[in-house]
Amino acid sequence: MAGLVCKHTAGAPEGERVWDVAFSPLGNALAVTGGFHAVALVDAAAPERQLDMLDEVHERTVRRIGWAPSGRALAAASFDGTVSVWALPDDGAPGGFALAHLLQGHENEVKAAAWSASGALLATCSRDKSVWIWNLDPDGGAPACVAVLQGHSQDVKTVVWHPSQDVLVSASYDNELRLWIDDDGDWFCCTVLAGHLSTVWDVAFSPDGSSLVSASSDGTLKIWTLSDVVAGKPAGSIITENSDYMCVATVSDYFTRDIYAVDWNKTTGLIAAAGGDNAIVVLAVDNAVASEVSTSLIASAPAAHDDDINAVAWHPRQPDLLASGADDGMIKVWQVPEP
Amino acid sequence: MADNPNPTVYMPTTAHREVKVDYDDDDMAREAIDAQEVFELIRHINDPEHPLTLEQLNVVQPGLISVDDERNTVEVKFTPTIPHCSMATLIGLTIRVRLLRSLPRRLKVAVAVTPGTHAQDAAITKQLNDKERVQAALENKALLRVVNKGLDGIDDIRD
Image (spheres, each protein chain N blue to C red):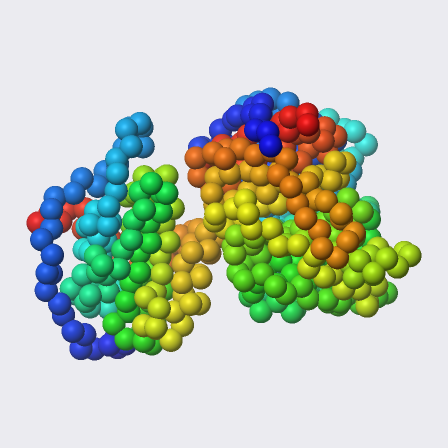
């Protein structure tokens, strides 16, 4: 097991707590958000260099950011109950990100905003227990809400899209995850993933979408795999209304407190996770399609930050790089050493 | 009308010592913390309903505080005066805010309702330890005002 190498360290605006870090799809910018009520865009290769500041819209914490797959727009979810959508000017006209839309409708704190792989849909979730699906107008008009998904009995902490299909997973304070699919415009929950003993804070899909990893306040990660894939069925990774994910591993060895963040590397298949014990761990998943998978520790940074870590994100183009953001007001970029 | 119009009032039984509460963030020296110091920080918090402190109502007690300085953990259990106290969440939040503002950042603080002393003890404890919910509550100006009222004058009090 190796130590993660810290490549860059930078302070967040106003020294405030960092709630989220997200690389742009090309990996040149890092979006950072938190207690400074805005989204800061910083240079991913030199995070102390601020590129842009998307501010003066939210009055309260901005919890999470979702990048459009094009990298030309992003959505920011705020505790003020709104989601701001920011876009670059069309046709390559000069200028940075400008506020394009302010999405209203949630009753209270919005916790996450996530763009589907196709770029056509945006999902948002809130303490009001609901998940909203918004249809994005390709001509730049205001997004229209096409579904309000009820099912969670508590605060919905995050929403994450499948890497290729229009399938959404949500994670909640009710200790469960829900998988949502669409049947000709009619969205519904096809399966509930129960098993965590406390709040589920974050979730990520495996590179092909056949597995999920969830992070919880119960101090464990759980890995879930599509039952059809576990059973070895051909085309088992296509999600239908009958699809079901089964828990194939519960990982508790490396964590002593709540786990707040997890990300699955789309190139290497490594999982990064972090949380209330100020540490980052990088795990490899062995036997990913068997009914009982195991994990092994690849690298870690035991005192990565001086306080809770709220976010970890793999770089989309440089698979050995990882960003983290924490309550200590710091953003860090780490390198996983060569094995 | 208060939930509990006639609460039992307790006299302090412990001998209190002077405690320095302004931990300077820039001070690199690690100061060890113990349960008595944590108690000292919270015993003067005003009850939201009565002109009494949490100590006088036995809501907080030194024996219900545990500190593991080596592992940087603090756990404070508090006991509502009655099992249906509608103020329990507010009391817990006020304790949490007091400790957030006063203790060194290295300490991980858990605030819990003493198990079995409130009809919703587990639900309230879960809420008080959800960092998003706590942060959102503190961004609610009306709620923050009530929390600050509970902490009113607290730093002026010295035995």
